[in-house]
Length: 178
Image (tube, rainbow, N blue to C red):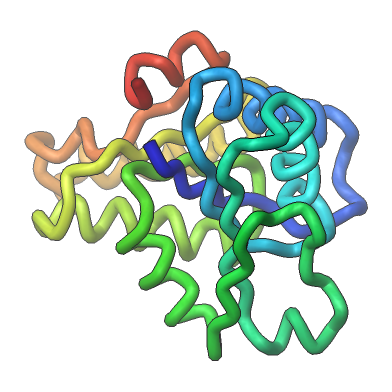
């Protein structure tokens, strides 16, 4: 499978999140999957790429990076293929079309934008690909509470309660990505 990984590009976050990114990259490589990700040389993006390539140097790693970030000199050197795009909209579209499923690691506005869009598109029937928050430290716990409120107050029908999953360890990821 080609797994899209959405995550932070910050180098200033707690070390425990870099460990989570490292675990994920290694797990994807060990299980023979490919990664499609943001292609930046910073933050959890670079850690996912580094651990993936350390585990499987021949594994397929595709970075999709907007010109603005390229111009900042933040393109990874680890990717087998770097797809240069005009903007974030084009980046998300290419990742969506190429990926067989989506994993969100800890991140901020960009990560939320990317993973929420995948949830909405699955809800509307544009795809039926797995969407998983890989979240051993419950970084997104307040977000899950908000999602629960959407359901409990009928903003979203309960028939959509399986649009996404949460995995606290790599073993659970295997239920969605095989």
